[in-house]
Length: 198
Image 1: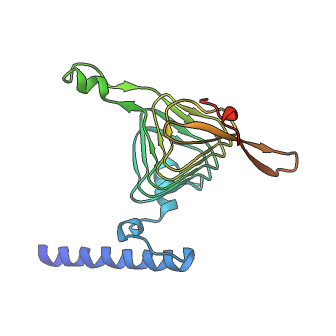
Image 2: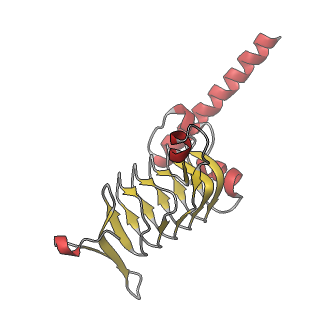
Image 3: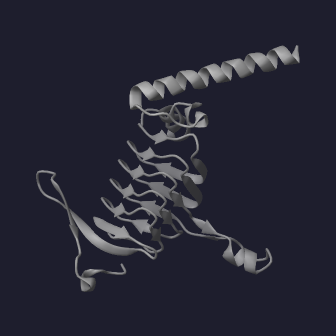
């Protein structure tokens, strides 16, 4: 009897994955690793953050602790959202593949042989931000609204609103302006003297 149940469940799971993979191919014209298609990404967002917010969360995303996410936000594959120190992500954000947002570290704990506590501090990401592939955002950081963080950037300090930042360590390399008609302009600093550490 157990073998029949196991085979039936195995068949049902495989069938569900195939249906979701077909849906992904038809709707988005792409295929994903099978584990990404076990659950619909918006259904996962509804389950974690509440229904009707249009939050997309990929299956491979890791979420722990106190994480709050605003509506219409996309959280890509292989993202790590550590909310142990508190994490708020605004509305209309795009959190790209393999981004890590860390609100704690265990440096002092490790160096003290497990005697010291973990260091924790909240992270806040404003509305309408784009966080590029592989970026790492460290504890205690605030990223102002309408900011862009480039791929593989290590964000180790706060970023003013409407900033463009990149590098390791992060530097502000430009700014964003939005006119009264909603037209977005990205202005990049070209002279070394224009680059800022903030």
